[in-house]
Image 1 (cartoon, rainbow, N blue to C red):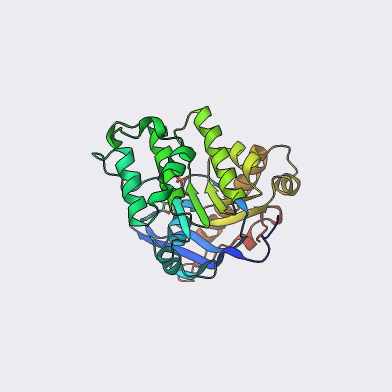
Image 2 (cartoon, rainbow, N blue to C red; image 1 turned 90 degrees about the horizontal axis):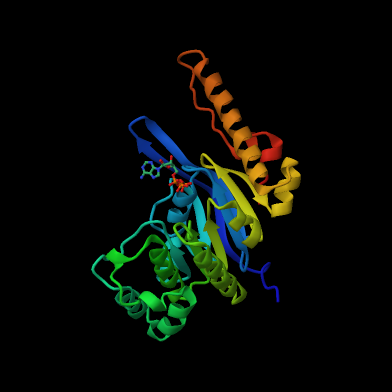
Length: 281
Ligand SMILES: Nc1ncnc2c1ncn2[C@@H]1O[C@H](COP(=O)(O)OP(=O)(O)OP(=O)(O)O)[C@@H](O)[C@H]1O
């Protein structure tokens, strides 16, 4: 049953993304190292601005890295996209408001040579009942279901899902996770960002916690609880992120008191954070 260990679906080596901003450079992703064996379901948690979407965009070749290396089944992000190794569901992105749901799905299926998969994917994503509806009149949850269909259509071996259940009602969420479990049992690797901690606790083999670009924790649900001495994932999440935030604030204050003229560049890394909050893959 388990073919996981042989292949790495995703490998990130020292990946950093710095955005130039009006207030100076902003490190959105800070020396991220990660290995995800094929077949895993990985949840990525993090407060707003933690760097989750930026990481996904670099994996999907939508954003260049500042430094580091990314491999998807041994291929660069560009090669992986060309070979359609990845299916993705992002928070935003080009749906045409005047097209119907069916037209949108069929167009992508035709583009990727997957027309025969349309009926199965339609059923899997639960969009049968609103196929003829125009995108502009779809609810947020309906749009998310369509995005799931679009993510599934090319049979990519790696699924990248950014807050996939945002706007879904409880039934839709339950159905969604059923479909993701099916896709995972068919051998797909799934990496998803979510703010719903129960979705990480219930569905992930492994949970990552990011904060301000740093990977703070990486382990099973139980490992995160043991690591933080907490009883729930919510408590563990707050313990990790609060501790990191405090550490970063102290570090910033120290920098402010440095003698003028001294280089103020102290590189923050996950390794420099308090020990309980740090465990890279
Ligand atoms: N194009 C950009 N230019 C400048 N800064 C950016 C850009 N894109 C993202 N950022 C900044 O990078 C940081 C990480 O953003 P990112 O969208 O990756 O966070 P996130 O973890 O996905 O957050 P959320 O949970 O709110 O979706 C934030 O501080 C954000 O403001």
